[in-house]
Length: 452
Image 1 (cartoon, helix red, strand yellow):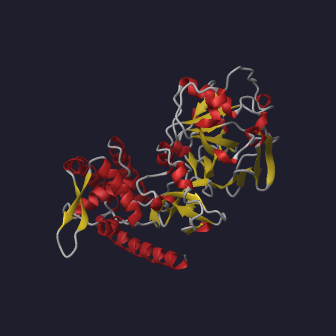
Image 2: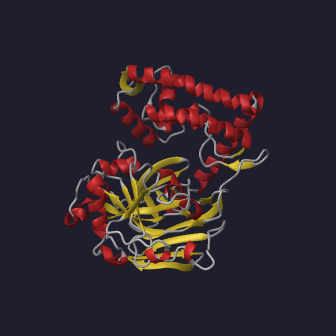
Image 3: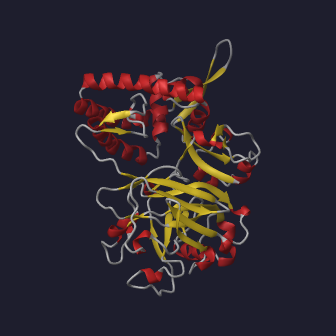
């Protein structure tokens, strides 16, 4: 079984690769009370997901955008210098009896098919193809012999590295390993039942079709089961935690001369039993006074503006970034996603009562996704279901007292963020631009729906 996180028409979901490998079975719709792939693992619902493996696909594979495999893993451990010969690539060779361990942040990874970004601060973006372990069952001090039982499945990573920043500290690689969108993870999670001998897995990394890394997991100094045992000694491993298990010899830094990744390069990381993770390199967009940047993240989603995904002047981009800087910590403090906040705001605008279809229309969400978010908010006591009398009795939604209080606390900050955008860009120009882009977005969505 192959599980993936994806988006289509701007709506995030998770699903199964169809049996014929040509499409995606939408688990977000079928398991509407489960928010994402991480929650699916946390709730131990893999068996339920498997029941839909033979269903016909809901989306063609080429129509979806692959997102980071796990939206926000709690822990991402990385094992360094772990393949035979890797220590020889370093001036100070490691002969330690224990693994070299460091951590990465979720935002340093993108999904299959997305661009890896080379920052303006360095040209030394390098590749590192790796096998990824995703934990499925929590455990502490896990014996080596029991480690496999804690694995949900395997995936792939390009553990992209900014080499000169790795050297900024003598015993510290953190700053070279955590540049945003410098690495990738995916394309999907292959459940552990599909693997026999983990040591036999053959990992190959290609750059523009040229083989740069080629080795088996048997060459690891510290095997996958030992890594789980070792890491779980000091940290409880939980469902959705990630382990990047190390990269073979052949990184670009060790070639003569070094071969750094450049815009347009294509990096492919493959294991036959898993598949291929493919990404293209691009330069990180730089702010310029009259430059126009394509935004894949919808500007203003969380602050009550209409969603759109078009080219925006940099003035608006800067204002949006400022708005998000103020607003997202407030969401995080209350454990809210931006979609959940849109739902709460829509309920407020609807005078505390709205049916599910109307809610989906107001928040630009599909009904199954709105239903899943509502179930999450209802479970937290922020939304309550009500019944109205009429020709038919139908369910409607309203803010609970707790939800109303939360909106009152956060809303002034979101309004301030909108005012900041309006102030920087100009009220009249902003209104005209939003109207124009909303029309373009609606036309684009219609064309995409007709094409599919």
